[in-house]
Every structure is written in structure tokens, then in C-alpha cells.
Image (cartoon, rainbow, N blue to C red; front, side):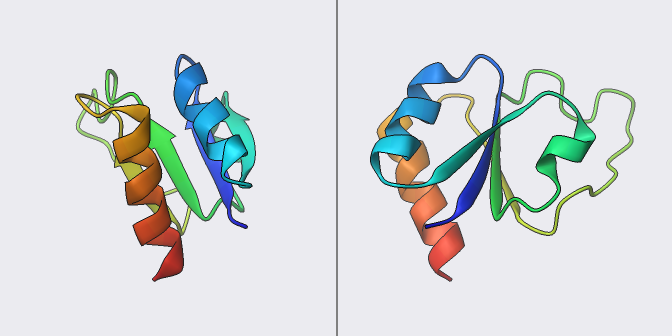
Length: 81
């Protein structure tokens, strides 16, 4: 399965992804995102200063307004292809 980075505060998403068999890494700093196939972030502090440095080659999913199930579906779509 895929290696998914999940931002702090998304415990329900982390648990749901683990149930699907994904390796889940908690995102605490930029280096945690390296090597992840996909990252899930809260979106609360994204691009605060107008800077968007890419630290991962994988997709980034913003969890804002989505259920854990919807996020898992998006992760599945991103990592499959």
C-alpha cells in the first residue's frame, strides 16, 4: 500500500487510512513529507505567506470540509493513478 502523510489533528483520517492498509506518517515538519505518496493536510495554515515550496512529489489533499471516508476515496484515486 501507499505511504501517506497526515497532518496533526486528523486522527480519524489517520485511523481510516491505516484500516485500509496504508502506511501512515504523522506530518510534524517538512522532512516528514519526503517519501510520501500523498499527504493530507488540514488546510488551516496552507500558503500563509504566499509561499508554496514543494517538499513532496506526491499529491496533497486538503481535508477541510471532507469526511474521513471522502478523504480515503481521494487518497485511493491519487495513489492508484
